[in-house]
Structure formats: C-alpha cells, structure tokens
Amino acid sequence: MWSGKDVQTWVLEQCGKTVYLGRTYEFMRAAGFSPQKPRPPHVKGDETVKADFKTKG
Image 1 (cartoon, helix red, strand yellow):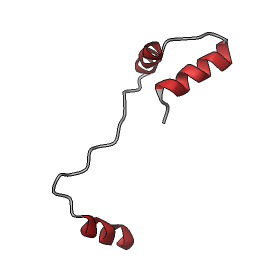
Image 2 (cartoon, rainbow, N blue to C red; image 1 turned 135 degrees about the vertical axis):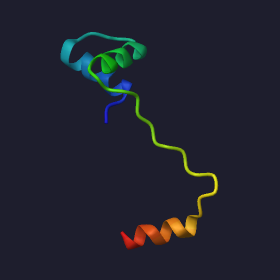
Image 3 (spheres, one colour; image 1 turned 60 degrees about the vertical axis):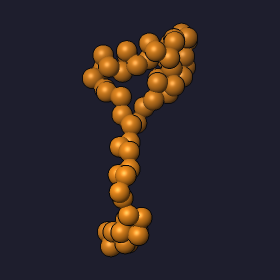
Image 4 (cartoon, rainbow, N blue to C red; image 1 turned 180 degrees about the vertical axis):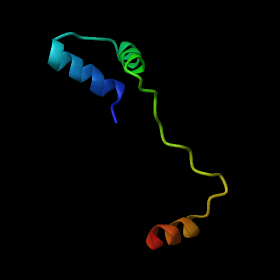
C-alpha cells in the first residue's frame, strides 16, 4: 500500500523532482488508486469475542 509520502519520496529518487504532498494524491488518483484507510472499530464490539474468533481462525 502506497502513501502520499511514499510517492513523494519515489518521485524524488526516480526523477529528482520535489513535489507537494497534495500533488502525489492527484498522481495516485490518475493512476486509478483511491485513498485507503482502515474501517473504524464497531462501537459495540466485544473484545473477548474478537479474541476468541482470532484464535479459531
């Protein structure tokens, strides 16, 4: 998974150009990527049930 900062570093290393962080997200969208972030935990989530489920997997 690429972040804007990763793209910014890559462009600097590969092309020798400094780009603004906002521009890197435009590059990623143009390449067909969308911003990704983890889903928030459920408000009523039970930690013991989650722990039991993880051990069964």
